[in-house]
Length: 289
Ligand code: KIV
Image 1 (tube, helix red, strand yellow):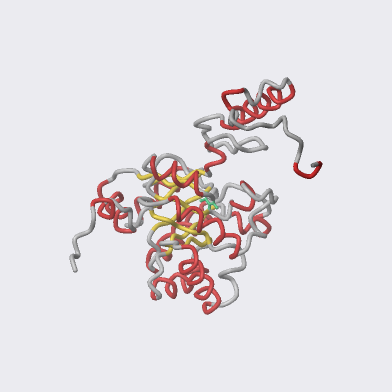
Image 2 (cartoon, rainbow, N blue to C red):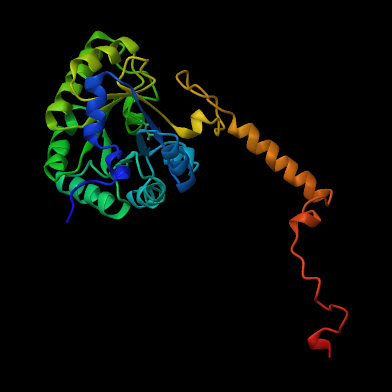
């Protein structure tokens, strides 16, 4: 049996690839995906890390926050993303409640996510409180991406979606969290909604990659919710979102054009219809004979 990887596999993004980016000082790109077509487009575009985020709840399922999404729903969408992803590292969020009960329960849920969806890593939110979970998952050979700062699953505890780490004490706590998460075995840390100065400091403090969202330009990588990037949202975007395209307007126009064409009977045209010229439809119908 040959152990030489095929060219496609050699290009596959792994946790080691992300680490190599950190060491080389080259930025990598992460993006959320929740379905097959988005995954294929993102993978073809060379996005390095695809995250089936629990933002699924808001971006796709229409919930007000991320709290209600279940392990089964995450797996359902992650399977579709898996089918569309060849090169990118596939990371799946552990939803709220799936890693808060006990280490045993965390392991059971993470193993289920990996086995059923094909995830290559899981992500969970929290700082020093999560180090025992991360140690256990890492010991079970499941790579873990950590997530600190504005952690949406802590919505109620934070009193809303508020930028974190603005006071000296809070900033030092987040820096300590980052070091603890690294020591516990995290392969990368998402830094969300923190001042850019703090994100830059944490990025220089740790030897694992940081992935920023609303954390300024000095992290090792950036991540965005794909629906924000494409303007497929129904609320004003956060300050940190740059809309790279207006798919919302494009879709609205396409749907209005479709409706107009159907109403005007200009769709479908003859060229969009099937033909069977040899049919003799002048004969009486079978049932009336
Ligand atoms: O769920 C999510 O989409 C996320 C990020 C954007 C980091 O956690």
